[in-house]
Length: 312
Image 1 (cartoon, one colour):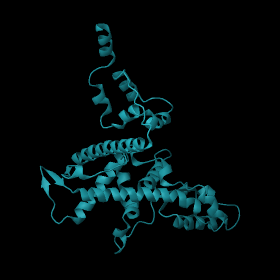
Image 2 (image 1 turned 45 degrees about the vertical axis):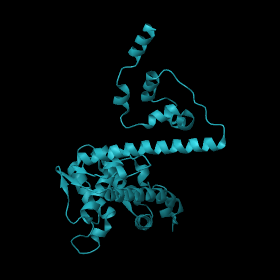
Image 3 (image 1 turned 90 degrees about the horizontal axis):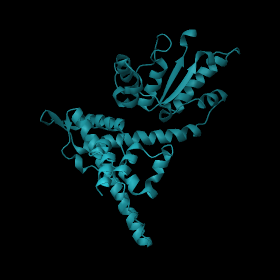
Image 4 (image 1 turned 60 degrees about the vertical axis):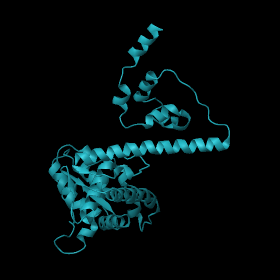
């Protein structure tokens, strides 16, 4: 018995569960209910995650709990299981939101009243807090500051979540709408096959090192008019820019910057080159250019990136 206990102590270092898992409480559910959550484990290259293996070592004795055979009891068991899963996800989201609030010197006393069922990635949490901050500033007459932190309400965070859901729904509808776009000619049809929806671009500003000044300029000149068009509705001084010229040697990140702008702004990406526009047939180039802008207006918002423009 003594040898068995010492062997267990060596194989299961104390404190591992709390230091490795953090807020990822759903990993325990994957192990506890493999029949319901095992699909997620199989999707990860058919291998059990490292954290799951460590938990298996930490709890070597397993007790199999059979599902209720009665249909009514089985339905009740599944409902309770789904409810517990939602509670764990909501707690993890609250923890992530509180961390971002603290990092930006913000606080939300009624944060616990929020119930967010879907899992929010860290980048989505930061966007939600940014939109919540803007909502609070626009609707707050006099800001409240406590312990050097700006107090925002759960209503503002809910508004930020609504903006996030709206963008996600637009991205889903964009994928469907690209297939349903009616093209007027062969040029638009050819271009449509090369259009990349924002969810499939796979490049963001976080993937581009340095160039912070360029990123800030692109956010102000390109992304802001796409995301907040109401700010540019009146006056001549606030008109959105017509276009941006990126210049520099090959390999300096011009194409990646254009793709990142489209991703961050939730716009379709159209990449064309001057060699594809030019044609040996008279008038073909003009028709191609016209098709670029007519198609872009149909699938708006969109970002048109013209490569090799210096070869004109």
